[in-house]
Image 1 (cartoon, rainbow, N blue to C red):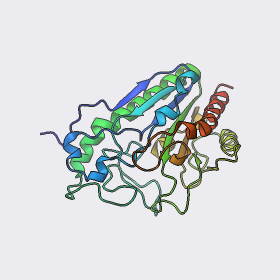
Image 2: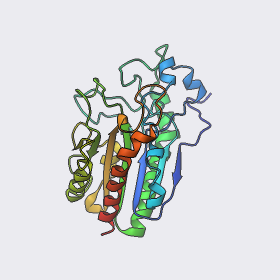
Image 3: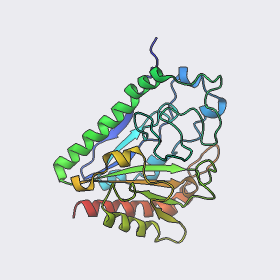
Image 4: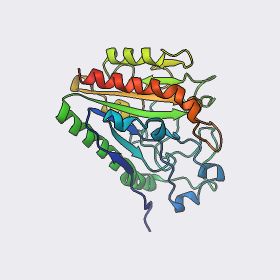
Length: 270
């Protein structure tokens, strides 16, 4: 019997026409049945999902962006972690490549049968590698067609998570790996947009500086500008079960997100 099997494809992908790829590595909710059976009741609700981002970014096609969306839960494997599982924030609490606990620091595995190295390797081969292969291939295609390309890594998180940060998180958290993954002039434009509406708070390279995807693929000197946006979920949805999308709430922040992506496109097409 295989160490890890799934009947679901590792990602959904739509190719766009303009030099922008939107990556959504944490929106997946699928748990293969054999794995789900090992998890706690809480974990099977996949509470740490980046819920509803496809709906929030429903303007992506109109912008001509390519869109890459994970299908499996981050509890299966975290596509925004390095393949060796190294910590992105040394000295701070983090979840791993194949997490064993929730954001609330509760165990995922009901009987403690956490994945061993062989199972982690199987999950990496089945899901992590195809997602990153598609991401790299699409960046290469867009760069060949346009010369310069942008990668936008879309995320969301509960606004209060004591394990990871004190108090309430700012609403719009831009990360550029402390300036290494995109041109500082672009980052400054994005921060200005993030802070333009007094209803929302915005910060650049605060608690979230960008995960593996932003850091791995961002290469402004080489024509790839990568930005992560980590949004508070209270900006557009319910932060507790049933984690519903709130259209009237989302309508407040969605134009701001779109303006940021329009600014990204204007910058790389200038």
